[in-house]
Length: 575
Ligand code: DGT
Ligand code: CA
Ligand code: CA
Ligand code: ZN
Image 1: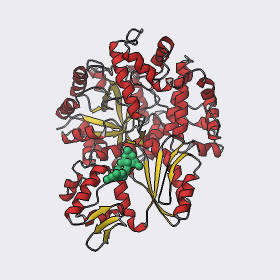
Image 2 (image 1 turned 120 degrees about the horizontal axis):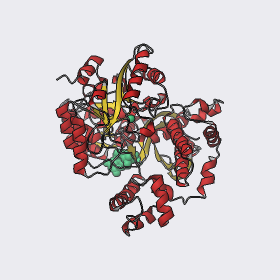
Image 3 (image 1 turned 45 degrees about the vertical axis):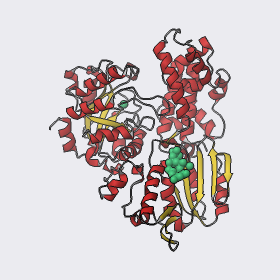
Image 4 (image 1 turned 90 degrees about the horizontal axis):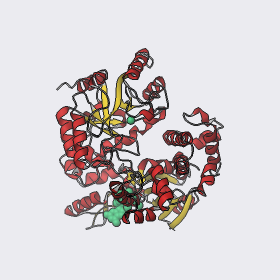
């Protein structure tokens, strides 16, 4: 079945191919926007197609693209993919993904130097042939070399959110069999990591052979790597590897613990067991003297038998969680239901796909009672960014909508671009009209670390700024973050009462878990924000919450989990 992730990937690929072949920029943009819409859609499009729904009701999906999606769902290939595939060397698509390249530059590299893949790109950079090209330089050439290395590194891992979309129908398929009593996803997926290497499924089943056979018979299987009655490993058509292990009920908790990991956490637990004259493995916690099982069926019971409270999987990285558990000082981690507000949301006043009212309704439907619009400011002209006059018009529109959605308070914000020198893209008088000032970086990614640090420190030191959004600008699998001394930025944020964002978009998850934790430890609060560009964009908040949990965040340290009065006093910069 064509998952939304896979449909989105095809649409994005078409956008890249179109751009590589110098097609009409509007058509390129249409495919790119459609890819995002599909990626954000909560319901499988395949289901909508089968139900005979018209996909054109989705924002940004017109006749041509709807027809291509229907083809894909029906098992065919999207036509532009086939048409364009012959025009462009396949390796060029990987070149597009190299940080600092993108489709426009890839086209130049291909036409001028015959670069048709990563190897050719690397050779051209090493041979110094890129710096001489128009629009490139020695610095770009250097960045491309580093970029090639990072693309190769990223290629081995998948975003957790993508893996989640791929695995959901597989889990449903396995659970639909009555032999299956229990099924859990373990591994890094359960720990909530932003990317996963592979998926680890555990199943308690009445009939091993039958369950393994059913797994192999799933219609999305690419290759069976190995299969027995206890374990089967295979890859799905998008390349994701899935391991399925059959586990007896009396060992299920122990297996869940073992295969959730991390390895570092497990090493500590095993040692702890030894110190208590016990032995821990994936079948249980054992007393070797008489071979009795002290715990095994239940994960919490296993931790208890080791003298510890149950530790949330997100913390299991041996980063202090065992010590905290021992001291009964585990944090009460943030939960999705704690989020009251979302302070970074776009509308069609800039590059969002929906109007203010639609976004307000959607926020309420996603359980929020405070919505902070943060459309782009004037610098991002291609997004229709708001200058002062347009901002005032938006505020009028918001005033008229003030009672439109019961139970929802709207805050007037803007996502203001930070210039390369750290200055803001809007004057103070205009900024003062806003309830929430969010700043972020959308260009000049390649400044030196010193310059970049100066830039961000200056931005967060501005007295009218409240939040620094997606602080490093990283795009998982596509672009490393900017080079910046985040310690210095965090220090400045702490001094000026500025929050740092965890952007919940699964492509960003920026700050990452380590820096988010460092920020919290320095007393800087977080804002977990969807950066929604359409009504379905709020769904990503769950990914941001996972990231916050991995950073040890409690709701007390997340400004959009605070009651409105407390949030307002933060925004007023009250001490
Ligand atoms: P991934 O797949 O790279 O995102 O990361 P994980 O953590 O899912 O790692 P994976 O799939 O290799 O194994 C899942 C868990 O199983 C891992 O976190 C700990 C446990 N595990 C697997 N192999 C070993 C091993 O050789 N020794 C120990 N102690 N634990 C292992
Ligand atoms: Ca794994
Ligand atoms: Ca594995
Ligand atoms: Zn944004």
